[in-house]
Length: 268
Image (cartoon, rainbow, N blue to C red; front, side):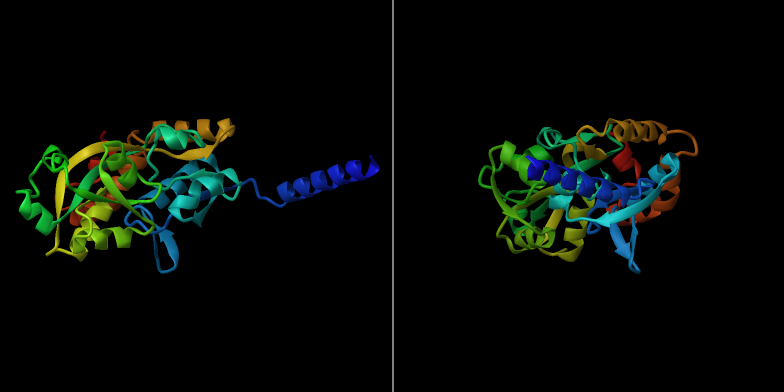
C-alpha cells in the first residue's frame, strides 16, 4: 500500500513540476511552415498570413506567441499531447476532425480548386474555364490526395479512385507526369504546382467547395476556444485583422492567383 501511495505521489510531483516549468504566458501555436504565403519560413523566421493571424491573436490575448513548426498530419496529436496550445494552420473544419478537437468559428474559407494533367484535360475537352461538374463527370479520372487532408477526403467521399501521398510535391509530380489526373486542393498548392509544371498541367478555377478554416484547441479547453472566437468576431472591424492583412498581402496574393486577392479567402 505504501509503495502504491509513494508511486502516486511521485507521479503527481512530476506532473506538477512539468506544469510549473511551462510558461502559461506563452501561446504555443502549431502550424506547418510548408505552405506559402499562409505558412512559411523566410530568413529562418516564420512568416505568412497565418503567422500574422497568430501574432494578432497573441496581442489580443496579451500573450507572447511561439510558432511551433509541426507537420500537418501531426498537428492534432501534438495539440492533444500538450506540445502546442492551438492550431492556426489552414486546417479545414471537418466532422472527422471534430471528433478529436474543438474548432473555433471559421476565419477563412479556402476554395478547393483543381490541378489537372494537361494530356488528360485535352483528351476530355477540359480547359481552365470548364466547370467542376465537367471534371467530375469523367468517371475514369484518377485522383491524387494528401494523407489526412481534404484532397483525399473529397474525392473519396465522391467514390473516386484516389492515390494517397504523404508529400504535396509528390502528389503534384504525379499529376504532372500523368500517373494521376487530378489533385483537388486549396488555391496556392494548385497554382504553385501549375507554375512548377506549366506545360503538363492546368488549373480549373471553378471550386468544388468552399472549405471553412478554423483554429483548433484541445477538447475541454473552453476558455481558449471562447477567446479565439472573441478575437475572430473582431476581424471584420474597421482597422481590424482583415484590414491589416489586406494591406500586407493583397498584392502578393493577386500576383500568385492572377485574378484574386485576400477576399478570395474571407468570403464564403
